[in-house]
Image 1 (tube, helix red, strand yellow):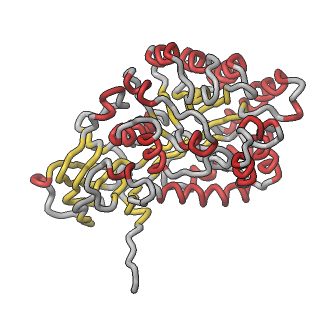
Image 2 (cartoon, one colour):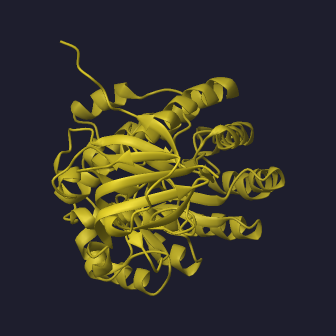
Image 3 (tube, helix red, strand yellow):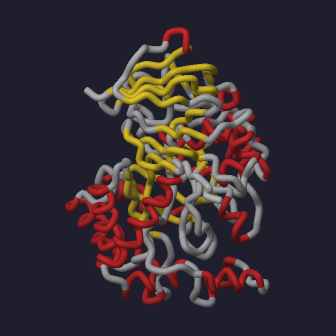
Length: 420
């Protein structure tokens, strides 16, 4: 079995001798960090790690990590990576003063992406999404969730999910698929909302389940989109086919979506720009992971997520990119960490925890990824030399991801030499 040995690691982050499924509250700032360490990978799995005093003498490949940090690969638990075209014209509209809701009412937003996706072929969607997937791996992402939701017809939702299946078959990293048919109300159903929900429940979900196309079910619970009752119906129907819920809620308004999601045992509630004290208590009563997407309010304007409120209440917060063409056209997880520090009040260690082990929990991959623990997959990031871990989110404009290893193989190497 081939072995890979990293020596002289300055900071080995989330080095767990007693692995945890997630970190909550104050635990998030007290993650285990081992200094002057080694990491041994055998056959793509973490074999051992520890102080340099106990470092093995040889391996098939040896890497000197002097001055560098090793972190678990990011686990990005909320993206819309499959889409037909960018929407920079809406970016300009927002600069001119239009809000997200105003753009949506004019036929922009999700419906804009839906029209374009319905016109695109499966091959076009796959080719473009594959490039985006390779891009996010260069940022250090080692697992990702991808949603449908830009189809809004039986044919196009299935097309999106089949593209995600193709990506999963080809990708070196794990991919989880989420069915988001309840993303927006198609214009053809404007006068009959129930008919569209019936289509989701009675036709889309059975076909998706029959082909095994999704791991989760989602709905956008928000004013102008879907009500709590409609989201609850989607979650209930998904559960009948073995699909757990990962839902959009509380992006602009508090409507009761958190309550319904926790009651249904949802894996995560995502966005949470607006969260009441009562909703914090509801989250504390269940196992649902609050997942924050700070690059969305950064791009479209609005409230940043109350991360301190959630963490100080003892909750296990996750971070994700929300990569999509309308509100977050970026899958750069290190920038999400910077925003979480600068705009949400999170400490650097908390952001790393939220983007790794807690993100893995939001993907139900915590047994395989998210920390440096014996037996887990050898998927990790090797940084450039850094004086401290805080330097990673502090240097928000600098690419400090030097190499990315997936299952013990170096998939990305950014070392370069400038020629005079």
